[in-house]
Length: 101
Image 1: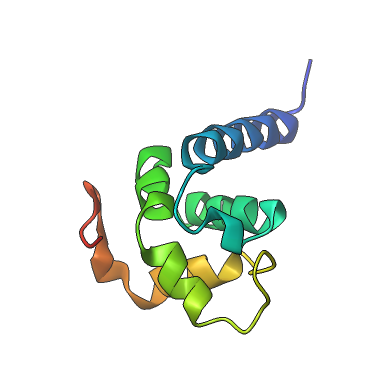
Image 2 (image 1 turned 180 degrees about the horizontal axis):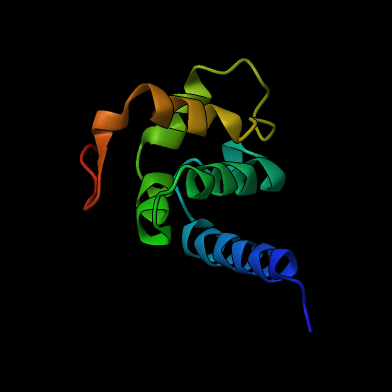
């Protein structure tokens, strides 16, 4: 029998994989490392956004705008910049999804 923490971790990992698979063709995907993209997804899920909303966020222009404001080289942008952008602009996201594109 697995401990509750292990089940939670597996669930989080599965959600991250699900959102990653749904967004790996996003416009800004290649600006981030795979780890950076996954870190952004994890951070948004941790903030309490539903996987469907996180998918919309990652497919929106938000990752592009976040990467544009980051000095990291192409393909090395950290996921925390997406999380920070969403934290600065919560009005862009509602329970129904992303309000701006």
